[in-house]
Each structure stands twice: as C-alpha cells, then as structure tokens.
Amino acid sequence: MAAVGAGGSTAAAGPGALSAGALEPGTASADLLLTWAGAEARGQSLPQPLPETSVRIPAHRRLKYISLAVLVVQNASLILSIRYARTLPGDRFFATTAVVMAEVLKGLTCLLLLFAQKRGNVKHLVLFLHEAVLVQYVDTLKLAVPSLIYTLQNNLQYVAISNLPAATFQVTYQLKILTTALFSVLMLNRSLSRLQWASLLLLFTGVAIVQAQQASGGGPRPLDQNPGAGLAAVVASCLSSGFAGVYFEKILKGSSGSVWLRNLQLGLFGTALGLVGLWWAEGTAVATRGFFFGYTPAVWGVVLNQAFGGLLVAVVVKYADNILKGFATSLSIVLSTVASIRLFGFHVDPLFALGAGLVIGAVYLYSLPRGAAKAIASASASASGPCVHQQPPGQPPPPQLSSHHGDLITESFLPKSVLVK
Image (cartoon, rainbow, N blue to C red; front, side, top):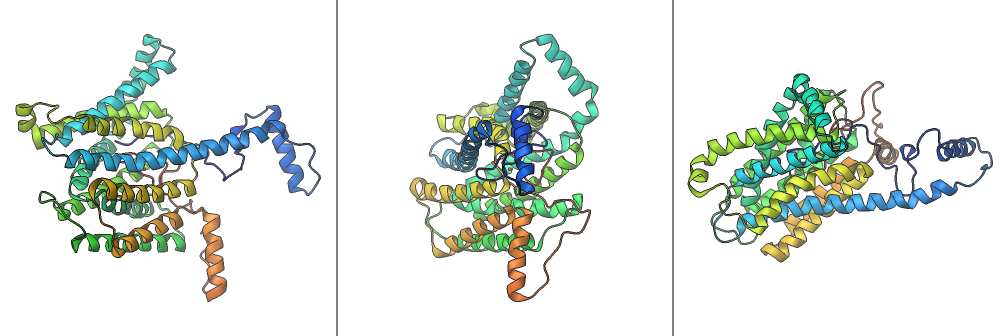
C-alpha cells in the first residue's frame, strides 16, 4: 500500500542551497534573506551577512544526507528481507497474511498519530474521523481503486521476489519509471523532454539485458523458483504501480486530507481487500494451518519494514530533491547486488553489469531537473547540429522520478499529491 505524502512539499534546491520554505514569512531571517537576495540580483553590495540562515544551511544539508540514507536503506532492505524470508528452509509463511498485517500496523500507526495531533482528545478524534471518512465519503471512496491496485501489487512483489534474485528484481523493477511516465503522458497530458525519452529507452534496454542474462541461466537457481513467473509478476507490478500512482494523483488533486488521514484511509481499504485476497487465494490453507503459520523473526522484520518503512520515507522524502532520489535508487541497486552476492551467492557477470549500469544511468538522467536536461540537450545540439527540444508553452512539467519502496510511492511522478514502494 502506498504511503501518501504531504502535498506541495518543497524539494531541496541543492547542496548548500537555502529553501524559501525553510524561513517563516515575516520573520527577521526571512526579510533579511529577501533583502540580501534582491541586492545580489541588482549587483549591489550585500547589506549584511546572514548569521541566522548560515546556521540553517549545514542543518538542511544534513537532512538531505539523512534522507538519502533512509531512502537507500528502505529501498534495498525491503527487497533483501523479503528474498531472505521467502528462501529460508522450513515452513513458508503465507504472503497474503503478511500483506494484511502490514496494512493493519500501518493503519494503527496513522490512527495513533492522528490521536496525538488531536492532543489525546478522543472526542475530537472521533468527530474528525466521522467528518473525514463518513461525511466526505466521496473522497474516501476515491481511494478504493488505488488501494485495490496497491494490494494486488504488494502480493505480486512477493511472487516476483520469490522467483527472482534480489538484484535482478531491483533492476527490473525500475520499469515502473517507464510505466508511470507513459501513464502520465496518456492520463495527465504531460510532456517529456528528448533526454527523458532517451533515458526511458536506455532503461528498457538495460532491463532487457538483465533479463536476457537471467534467461541464459546466470548463476545457480533453486528448483522451486520460476524466473518466467517472477518476470511476469514484476511486469504486472510495474504496470499496476504506474497506473495507480497516476490515477491517485488525478483523483486527489485539490484534496485537503492530511498525510496520516490518507494513509489511514488506504490502510482501511487495504486491510479489507487484503483479507478478500487471502480468502480467495489461500483461504483453505490459512484456515487449516493458522494465520501466523511460518512466521519467524525474519518474517516479522519484513512486515514491520513494509508497515513503518514506507511511513518513515514519507516523512523524510520531502528533504530529497529529484537528483537525490535518483542517486538513492542507484545506490540501492548497488547495495542490493553486493548484499545478494554475500547472502545468496549471486553471480555478477558482464551482461548483468552492463544492464544494471544502463539502468542506473537511465535513472540518473531521468531524474535531472528540466534546466539541467536542457543544458545537456543544448550541448549535444551544438556538437551535432540537431535542434533542441523546447517545452511547449502552457504544458505542465514532466513527471518526476519514481522512488518506489516496495509499496511506497514517494513524490514520484506525482509532484503535488502523493509521496516510490
């Protein structure tokens, strides 16, 4: 299930940069910053140093680095922990129960956070939830469709990771960038630069190379794993991720719900739909062996990572700009590959290294802001002669880089309304 982020969060402007949103309007620091910036723009001498804001810059930079670490660890650890738990010898837990438990814990956590926001007043919390969930039932029902898709996506991820090496899954799962971009163009009428289209082609080529390496039998493969089923599951998961994220943005534009309220609503639908999926897919087996059959500390680690990891990323991701998100995705691919070598005996051959390198490069290129992309295109045009692509007037900006962590949608292609999985 996706963790929804606060709308309109300000991305970091870059190392050492000062975000205008970091200063409260009307304060001495804000007025001083505006005076200083205006004087610099007019070529005048600076009126005075900024003693207060100079302290804020390194603090903001530290938040960016903390955000980078959280994004990398959550990206890689969820996939590695699922792979580890699904390949342990002994009784295998039911993936559908893990999906339901993650939604229950996530919903309870959001409920407690809303309770804290209401200063522990139960009456105020009940009235707020009645108004937000029942009275405004149309907004609540809008979340049913993405919730259904996210629940399906979470179950597909278990199927994919159970049948593909963690590093192969991590690389292949970046196809969600391609699917989300295509759905953004089709459903939101967004435009992409030539560099972004080229990066998507590069991304697809890299994933195809990795899958070719997998099909050729790279490394030992357990008998109970089916790479074909894993590939089908990850492609279906990428399609569902792209559609659900763009649909989510489309229906919730202008919505005023808080981050924790939206996650609570998603958790309610996710729990109900997860139980339906459990009954349909593994109902008889769960009834016979028990809901928590096969649960080990490793399985509980997966559940807790899914439940709280996404919410943690939802909090810190607003401090990460697009380049940082792309860098985090690239680092998580490298980290997953290194960990897979140590934990699962994964073999990296030249074909996999080439495909993974293309994917990492594509992710970085796609995450470049529009200005940097135009600069690269201009440099290329001056060398080769073709005309430079210009953004048509009145067109909205292209979708942003997706940083999905399991079931998490980080401000990915969904710049205002949602916060990946």
